[in-house]
Length: 151
Image (tube, rainbow, N blue to C red; front, side):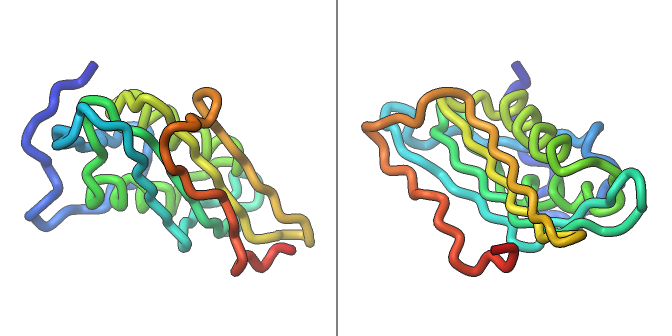
């Protein structure tokens, strides 16, 4: 498990990386490790590239998690998502890659990554990853998505 170190991106000018594969996700210590609470990150302008057509794919990524010892540093997460902009990956691969990176660096008690992709060819694709049963003792907002243009 990676150690919690001083964030490498926070407070400094950062270069956008070109691939999510080598990205190191920064974390900080959870200030409330004795409590169960949920954290949500939303990225309504996520972009990646179709690996077959090289056309851009646009989606909304929603990450919900319950932290353990670490929480995800938000600028680091933003830069991680930016690293997909020129990355050729199917919707499913991008979604699972995000989840695996969070699991590797954050080691949350529970994680859900939902991706809602704008339609191409008339078909929206939504991908969901979850590490286990949604906890009942912590508020976790539903995945209502009223501004979704794919329906």
